[in-house]
Length: 79
Image (cartoon, rainbow, N blue to C red; front, side, top):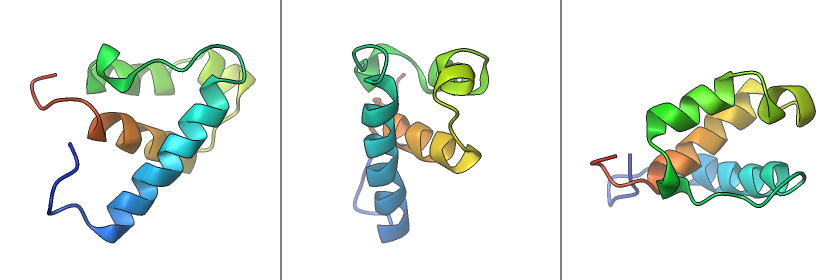
């Protein structure tokens, strides 16, 4: 969900770490894409599928969780 006044400090820390992991992981092979280019479901499928996130970057489950939290926080609720 997007950031709000109800976002806890733990969620904010997860989102911040997710952003750092996203920027570092994605830009190791290509330009990072804006979160709003895809839906949360699309990003989740990308993070869980085989491909660069799994085969090249070797993200841990915690890193994938943080990246999805970051991406989700920057997508409008309608997406």
